[in-house]
Amino acid sequence: MRFAGTFWKEVMASLAKARGGFKARRGAAAPGAGEDLREVCRTLLRTRGEASVVTLARGALDAFARLDGGGRREFFRFLAHELGPEPAALERAVEAYREAPGPETAAALARAAEPPRRELLGLLNTSPNGMSDLLVMREALLDALPAHPELRPLDEDFLYLLRAWFNRGFLELRRIDWRTPAFVLEKIIEYEAVHEILDWEDLQRRLEADRRCFGFFHPSLPDEPLIFVEVALCRGLASSVQELIFGEVEPDVEADTAVFYSISNCQRGLVGISFGNFLIKQVVHELAVEMPGLRRFATLSPIPGFRKWLTRAAGEGRLAGEGDLGDVESPDWPSGDLGPRVLRLCARYLLHEKRGRQPLDPVARFHLRNGARLERLNWMADPSRSGLIQSGGVMVNYVYDDAEVVANHEAYVNEGRIAHAGAVAALADEPLE
Image 1: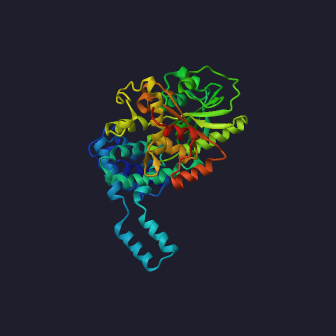
Image 2 (image 1 turned 90 degrees about the vertical axis):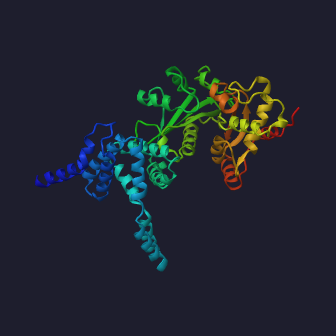
Image 3 (image 1 turned 90 degrees about the horizontal axis):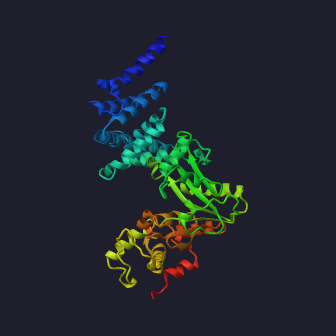
């Protein structure tokens, strides 16, 4: 009993450091809270008892939650500058490796190069709800980075740990349907990033018998989707997202095509961690097992960079030979009679406008890197306000052909070659009337 009493006194003494910082109510920063937090972090790095580590970690995360924006930036500077690798130890390890290169000195060098802040982040994750709070912390760091690029090494440490913690082996694929708990369905409505879910009726349509929705979840965030994809089961390629979202339910459709029409990342704190490739591959496998009659897996995808490129190119005079395109900066652009010209320019944008060897369009980069083929452009496939603003209403079908995926991927990553249907190439090179 004497041991237990001493143990808890030490833990509580650590938590009560410097003006009772942790007694301040959550949401209000106490005077000196930033210094309190730094002291608790130093104590946490010196502590070895499991229970005291968990208690200190919880206190540290609660203290961070109480800091205002300035306090958080000061804390990030503390992590970046005071909890980096120890220079003298690193120099000694480098010199030892130079004198006797080998596995032992290489391992010692790696240990010396690992910053203490990385260990600290791992200890914070031992706290109840620690993972969720660390994602909030990283969101605050991402907000600070543009004005404080010196914090980038700290973000690299976050990414290093998050990639390990959110390894594919830890992810759980779940089908989301109308029987999924309401608190998860509410988050699907909140996180949908491509085609806004208007209400519960809209969501129910997207979960009907001729639709599928799948998401990745993590054991540390069991009620928080990390990413989810919405799929329509169709006859042939879809050419209108409005039809997919609001069309009549066809529960007995003899589908030969699964059309992926929306994929949404849900956790901003996980920016830089790629889940989409794994998700699409696993969903294709699940659907192929469930529905052997499916012959084709495709997307109906937005083209988020097209309108921006078009506006810039028009302003720079690069579209002078394209004829009268109207006011490309108008929110109601384009009119119906511009369809052939807009499709031609969109095909040119997707095939020929590059950033280095890669397409300018981020969605194109994602699907082409995964081995898809650029198959077809669809005029006014998304006439919603956001669809017009992004791409003048145009959407694109990418097709995942199992016989071509590996070759397409290799050609893309090694040579920058874009797999595409002949009709798209013909459209891009079509002469003006």
